[in-house]
Image (cartoon, rainbow, N blue to C red; front, side, top):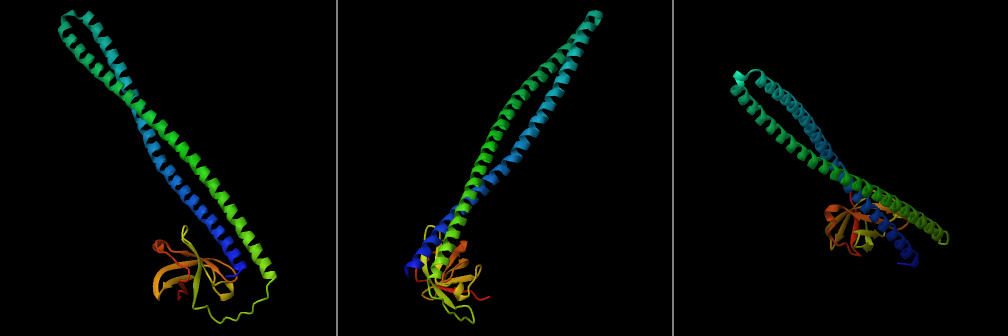
Length: 254
């Protein structure tokens, strides 16, 4: 590989690194967005529960006031009807027991309301933090995208300049080449470069089969096209396969 090709591959690897970073930030952004969406139903559920508890407390308070009025009324009747004192006392005791139970239930509901309110506040804080994290990831993704665009522009500029000092190539192609070879590999990002490019008639989106010793080891997709080389992204189901320099690439038949 001559010096110009090495420089082009270096720029290409840098662009792919930036693309990998952008994909990472985009994936993390989607995770944070899913986390935000999963919190919203919980907050709505807790808020609805809190509203129901408040309604129950209001209802119990109404019952307590009603029972208190009845208790007062029966107290007045006791004074007016001394003959009915035993009976009225019994009724008063029953109402008093009911009032105590209502007050206890009301106190329990108030405690539950406080707990639910605290839970709602915690969920809202978590939701706010998730939103901030999501916004930070979006900013990082935007920055990575700008870096990738700048690297691609620099690479295109370099290719144009390098082509300006080289002799023009005369290439006659009647069909796409049958095969090529892997010339560079980035193991960290599962990114490879092959020695087939625009002058060979391949285009972005073409499907490839990668062979070693005439045995199929992976399938891939052509991503970026240059004059005499292309970047290759291996499909997810073959991500664990180690692509090596010298592996044979063949255009998949339509």
